[in-house]
Length: 285
Image (cartoon, rainbow, N blue to C red; front, side, top):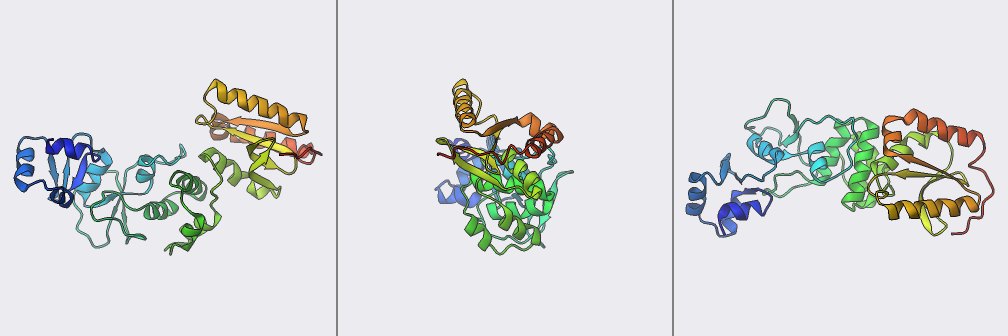
């Protein structure tokens, strides 16, 4: 195996110390660099063609992939309103390298130590930066996606010694019940209405996204969980069963929640005004 292939199999960028510990000699490294197969970055990192542009930029800056950039790399749900700028964290008082125009740099001491051989900051530090970078609603949406994606413990998050009030507040307010950012958005926006809202309530053999009051069911159709004919068939059968038991069922799509929130809000408000959340139902699971 060639060194460049070995690096490519590890994400395309590797700390030099990791290369040494894997028994690659300095001679092999110099040969790969001379051949143009491996790019050295700040005498610390070695990169090949499949390395992400964000990781390479962070290495050149002498920092780590951070904040919403790390969130996107890890597949956390990201609201459309979030700016696409690259975020990099650099230790306070460090001597930075090359920082590209438009990059956002966080000069912060880590909340949680990350391996010196990692090009990415810790999950906790990404959450801390997100709490400070984004407005409260999108920040909570991203936090709840991280909780679901990374299988984070709410108790553990609430025991972290967060350095900002924004991060501490998000740790207290965030839920581990949302399957998607759409559900987080829906709950956050309606939580001030003073109407009881339950997430993931078990009804008629399946869980529903939201149960408002006693009898108003709201389902949020994100693409991932409702993309096949079989999925749609199960949804239709379950909706029919709920209606037979006296529930009112409302479904909203991604496009409606993201691009027509006023229409969604008005529809739910009309249902509540009509008392559809207070009907007598056969609450058999």
